[in-house]
Amino acid sequence: MKMSGYFDYNATTPLSDGARDAWLRASERHWHNPSSLYREAAMTKRKLDEARQRLGELLGCEPERIVFTSGATESNNALFTRMGDTLGKQTRVVSSSIEHPSVREFLQRQFGSRVTLVKTTPRGELDADDFTEHLARNDVGLVTVMAANNECGLLQPWRDIAELCRERGVLVHTDAAQWIGKLPAHELGACDYITGCAHKFGGPKGVGFLVMRDEQETLSFLRGGPQEEGRRAGTENYPGIEAMVVALEELTPKLAGVALEQSVMRDDFEKNMLTTFPDLRIIGQGAERLWNTSMFVLPHGDNRKWLARLSQQGFAVSTGSACSAGHDGSSVVLSALGASMDEMSRVIRVSGGWDTTAADWRALAETFTAVSCKMPAVATTRG
Ligand code: PLP
Image (cartoon, rainbow, N blue to C red; front, side):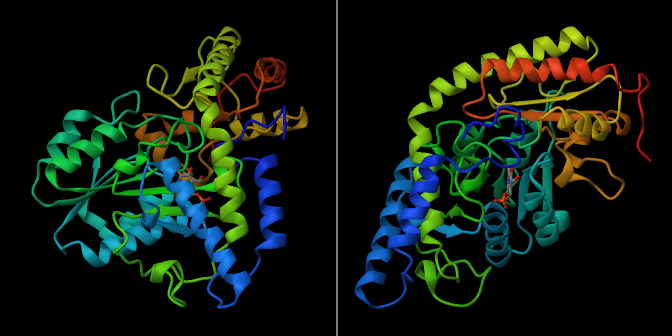
């Protein structure tokens, strides 16, 4: 589906045509409960297992490792619940300071002071020396670092992290909700645990998965029926799962080309923005970022006013920090990336999609320029 003014793909994506067709087909033909014992139900169960097999191929992991969930939040919460039950009481968890709240807040609740956050470089990348130093401690049992950041699009070196963890015998998890569907995912299976969700890549909302280390591992987050081989209670959402897998199957062969083309358009957009706003600060500039994401601090004007004016002109962008706001309105992630409170009130995130055109990016930059004249010239600080 083409949506020229929509630049909030990191928040969620429209359902792809293929995913919609797959969902409808599955809902019409295979709506039976896969746990029931008659022929139609057995067919739904077979279809479900085939979808698991196909997803395993896309992620480079054995299908038996995949547990379907309601989305990335559940996957993260379920994993850390398990880790809380299975890791030793003195065991530490290493993570980054720019994780999604479904990781950061749950880790905090589950492990408290046993969580170590690795320092970030001024560009937001994980500080490799600091990471190696933490990993060298003998009491680390789990490392969890996201693959791609939802706010500024920073990519984290999950392959290197997985390798280092394997050498040390430490478990490694990556929240790849923003990576999957935007960059090739077939090597992710090297991580012990992977989180993903459909609505970030053209699949339906309320469907996701957690890849576990092996098929023997249990989850106790949801209790009830013995679905998902006893690992996740609740009737499987086969139509949603089928639509998710189709969405990813359709995107995967296109990803390399899309990444090349789209990153040029995003970079041109940033150049255009810098021409209009020479003082614009692009967060994560120079570091490896998702091809679709640009997050920046505007030189003036409250970001909510920018959002409202852009919305009047048909453009949907984001302040990027809605779900990482602290109690004082500050963003945990932005402060880790070195933004002051004043700058946080001027931060905007734009995130394009697979079909966003150069004309769409240009129109967005032009609208920022046009709206700029209507914005107060002096920086505003939120109370
Ligand atoms: N993890 C990351 C990195 C995300 O970007 C998001 C969604 O914004 C989530 C987890 C939560 O995903 P869901 O909406 O499927 O629970």
